[in-house]
Image 1 (cartoon, helix red, strand yellow):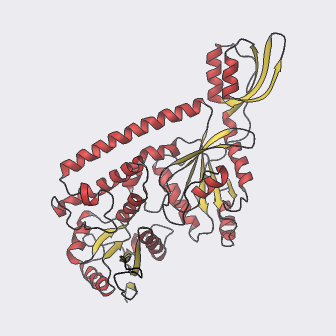
Image 2 (cartoon, one colour):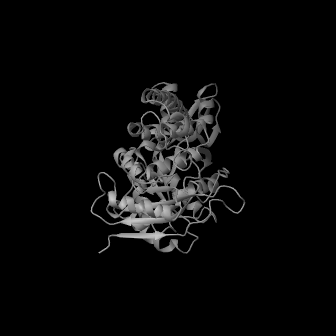
Image 3 (cartoon, one colour):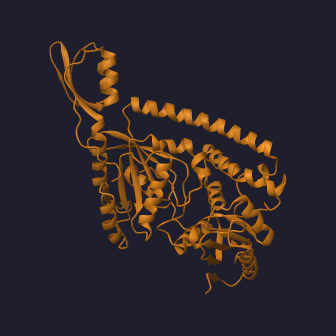
Length: 453
């Protein structure tokens, strides 16, 4: 019984119709035993194909080997590696992409057998991030991830990576910074870490100021291409770049949003997740992902029309758990409800995630309900105070600036204010007025049952 399946396309010429360079031709390789629970190998390779297309390549064949576990030395075994090499030559493919992260030894062994370049899923995702990073911070984070990936792989290449001749998997620091010795790379890693630590500290100061200004943070998280940026645009009119591609945006975008009862919050769009998200990226994007770990509420945006929506959810929660955010109050946003394919998944996912709402970022359906749910999740943070303050009390300006004024009445010698504010702001006010100086009491409303159930 043959435990390997093949899919091939005929070779084509090396140029496109306009005379330019054609997309790099790639063959995909996966071992069935390596797929995580819930994903079958065909689905995993279909996603890998989308990643190749996002990187600018085209898939011309794939190989699926069914075995209990990948070969320790060659991932697919030396004989199968030789077969794949011949197959790649037959379809004029210059690239072979493996669906799992290869060990440095596996990669070196495969490169010794194959004429085509060999990369793995991790290297492919890092390449896409290198293409997509726009901000200085994003570029530093991607470079750090790539350097961590390549450092243990330098041994097989001496001090030069001779096979980095351009193409998918070589962008970012590839052609320049990787053609140096280990000491220089470690120095560069240390320098980038120092710069990103400065970014982290600045973000920490910004978060503290937002809390002092009574500005809760609501972070959008989700699988790549689930519609997070479209959701941000629909709620705030942010005009964030949107494209039907994996990892279309990497840099965090934050916009102010006013909830139905007048409370202002900050909506923060973060980088998308994916199954087998490289650990190097999670480490490198630590400063960015802290926006998620420090958020008051998470909006988990799900493409309900995708056939693997349930598996996408599991992949997202795996990453949230890894970064320490899995217990945050979370609203599951079942996006693309306007598409007929979403109906069945919405019913199933509502049973799995009770704190959820079906919406469409395109038509606007369900966005009002989503806003109400965000308000309810934040309500336990809020207190309502009844204050009696002298006309010359400097804290009147503080209350007007930091709180939502419900009513303001004027008596002969005092101002009577009913205001709603965050508990942290109420604490600042109490401290400013002196212990026992405030009149009235505060109470919260709503429930905080937004944790994943």
